[in-house]
Length: 236
Image (cartoon, rainbow, N blue to C red; front, side, top):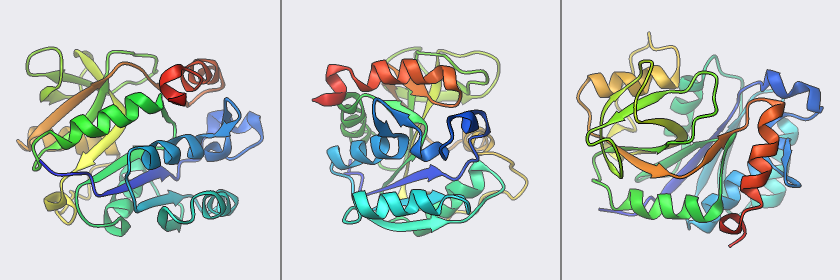
């Protein structure tokens, strides 16, 4: 068991379904604060630093916000458009600080207390395992299902993908240092395909359950995210 030594945030997606809100997706506000601030504040609360962030090439204003607000905690900001979530993930693996790495998507809104609890439980998981945040709360058009070994609790993940399971992924991924430089098949199009490939390759995968995580991908997700962000666990 070892601490999670570094963090990374994937924020390079175009956020096409949130364009009507007239702000780049990372700066879309939930309970008065941008998505990127919610995520980075959770990292800071959990004691994770340094942090690397990737934005797409049209989001220099997002990079400026992070430099002003989190300059002492964020060690690397990449402003580059990528072809997929997996390409953004690979970029973060290459530029983040050494050690066990926690990567979050920018749209995964989790109450602060739940996030910190996830980090502490993930640090207690086997060092060589890929640890995924998973949740029973499903409100996504295309969730990535997982099947845990025992069907509940914090435990090994038996499989990833398919049309059903006992939980879905929550946009939080802990990567052991030994996998940071490991080759990733070029044919894999998305991050979810990489996770499924890891499962099929027999890599140790461990799931940490989180009560509720909201994936802010559509305007209608904002109300649920705001209720979660304003919960006592978030402000603790």
